[in-house]
Image 1 (tube, rainbow, N blue to C red):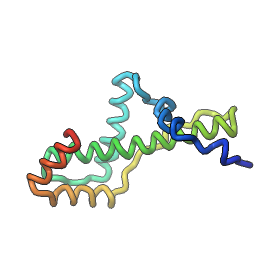
Image 2: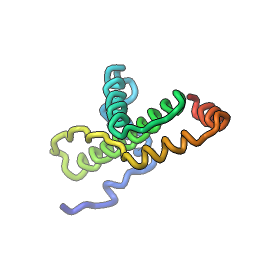
Image 3: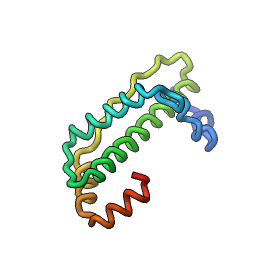
Image 4: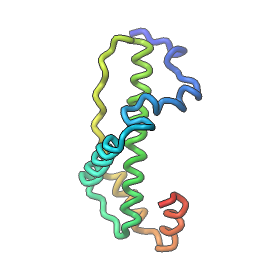
Length: 128
């Protein structure tokens, strides 16, 4: 397949609106959000990270949603590119969501090492 980079490199404004191409874009119903939440919870359960504080568990969940968002953004970008280079392509299924066990545990270890005051500051900065 010949690919013209000029046609698949999106401008900043186009990148900002990629969320409209995700399966669970703004304005979606809560059941879609719940399904994505279940994917994150399942991925977290599979890596079995251990944290001592409830707020740290919320931060693990927040981190999981962040990586799911990265994955969904990549899927949206793939769709935009395929629409450009192969307009008749079939819709792709969402990719399975998994977290890297080592990276997840390193993050959890970092959270566990925070003092109560440091965890308070981090949670406040993130609005958790």
